[in-house]
Image (cartoon, rainbow, N blue to C red; front, side):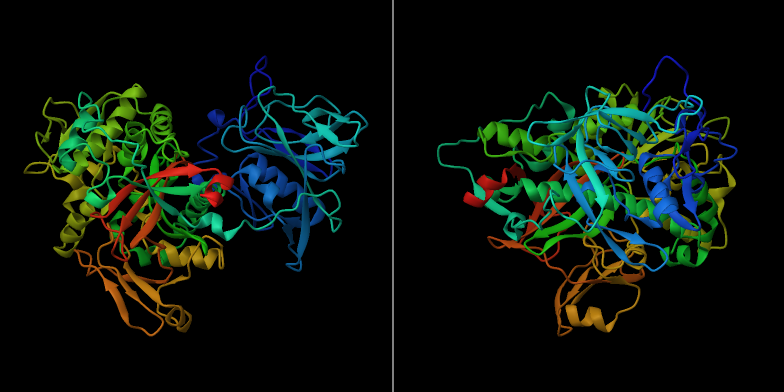
Length: 629
């Protein structure tokens, strides 16, 4: 972000000035970052005394660093800057003591003070993330603050602040701070103090707001026979797959839908954003330790490629899907499908069209933003040639690929779809080319990376690794020849093999023990897991295959079968899905460019959600209406 377009921004990492307390403030103009001094993602991590402060040089990083250097405490990791307003404590590093935080909404009767955190709402200049600054001086009619990621310009001589913001006091004694950007608003300020007078009372929400509700269309609402647009290739393919215009496969589900309260919606949005950040942190952690990477059962010959994939900041992740259980007991994560997830079209298109066709006005569509978010992500993806969609010749993958193509088309990306490996051949330069002779340079795939790895593992067992020796080998190109070609950029990138692997779950529990969104997960079965009941999962499984559930008496409750029985397993605490009208309900959320973008719900009479499970429209309903309904 830049507050002054009249001057060119200072190069990334340039010291803009020094804040009170002798804390330097840096430019975060990422476009000018030096690839020599910042060769990989890890280089963008900021540490002081071995303590992680955040990512260079974002607003949260400065806030945490300033507090640490001046007061010796930091606040916990948060996904978005506005989440700081909900924190209740900071941690003093020298004795690990927790000190209370109090939040004061803009207009509160306690004014900001030096050293407090000024918090912005999301929106406008601070869309999605919100913003945080440190107040360094309070005057009668204004305050001064220091911040990063706003105005990448060197301060004037003798200046020790980033911006000066107007402040006034109203007739009732409330203090109001205004932002210099007209499209933004200040949420309030956060002070480390024991005194709670005038502070926001931050209560845990009513558990009943997390109890999903199943509803049916009233008798006055009629769903027409045809409600999808078969002139659109994606919708025509979906109708073909489903055998008609329907959201759900079971007859009993044709008029059913699910309601999620506004409070629960905010929580799954927050969980999606926070967990994505934690998974990125954990992915970097794994890639710094070969002993941990060994846990992921990835051929060693591929490790250097994974490191290069992670280190290449352009090789970023477009989207993934989180699987949650949401109930009165809270929000808990089962896993992150960061590689080749499904249900995008159902969430971003079909459930909304079903509700519109039925005339359903209760609540709003939980997937309304997903298509636009995908388009925005593809527009920012740096694809500068033809993007080849590679899919299996499967009806579900066909409509999934066509839906993603809709987003790519809207983003102005040129797209070709390849079903199976039809038409692929080696060109004269030894590159894999499509049937038109165009070399493949950019790929988005519906295939899982594990499918390609199975080919590589077979080669390693044979004592050869032809795949990594370059192109032009005898025979037609295989999937692995395309996806592991160093000249081909693949979405989702190779490093998502780490992020989406279930071996990540015990590492997250190690790094963030007792985290409210995580379930106890281990590599070995512990007495604690036996006591709670547990689930076994293959580390690279998909679609609910090869999962077993055991209760507190070690009795098998449910098991599924599939092709992952030879994979190593992890153990996760049993935390059952809520049973609603005889169906187990799982909430899926979608992260696009690292931020929440939409949600849907899967249902099944089985304890395990699989690729055959049904999908119901998910509607977000205001808290009062939700509780009264």
